[in-house]
Image (tube, rainbow, N blue to C red; front, side, top):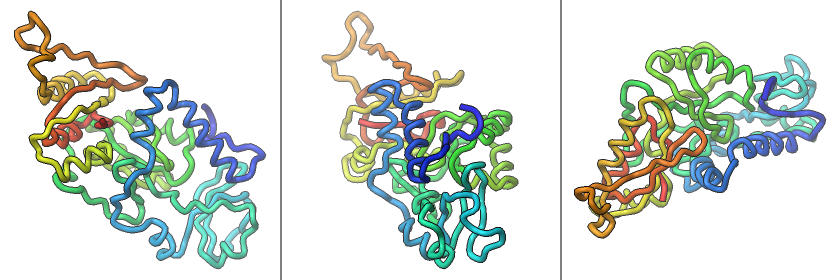
Length: 302
């Protein structure tokens, strides 16, 4: 897709948002397996955020709105244009300006919320905290990062990331991406975050954001020695073999499942799916945190 990633033409603003989501769904949902993966990764689940995003939005007195470019007069009090999309614009609007606005305005109550199933959070209002036993530690070196744009994604922004060695990997509602970056690209990403108005959040892809909510509950309440069958998804890149070996080292195999004539070893096959590789195996609950903490793991689910 060229130009704006969002294909907005002569539609109502709410329909434009629906079209944007549909385009992304067509891109992501190329098979039933891929659909399940994307659903586990992107669909909102039990929130662990530190504040209520809607209450926070009310508290700071402004909301983001998609509206026609001329919905607010230039310099109008209480309305600030954030980004122009040619046929419409994104505004930050206070309650008085909102009350006077036309009906053709789409209020973006959750515009700053990244909808991770494990832990949806508002990047502009919440203080991200890791639920124990996870942490906010991120290993040095190449790894996955989470970013969020200020509004609906523009192709030009993705092109800028790519030109800096930052590779978009997976869309995250709303207006976010998981990206791959080596150490140098991570420094360039931090510079973009500091110097541009269109990139409003960038941080490591922490392990607790990758774990299915049901597994997170087991980590919190079950004996670490308990065993569970999981699916691990890894971003496919030149150094993925190190994570393959690490994940496989955590396997727990019943004697009846050991391959014959192999000295007790078990053969594992990583299944390629789009830009990822999946492996199903049995592990101890206490090992899930370390698996999710690998910098190229994207999802740990049941």
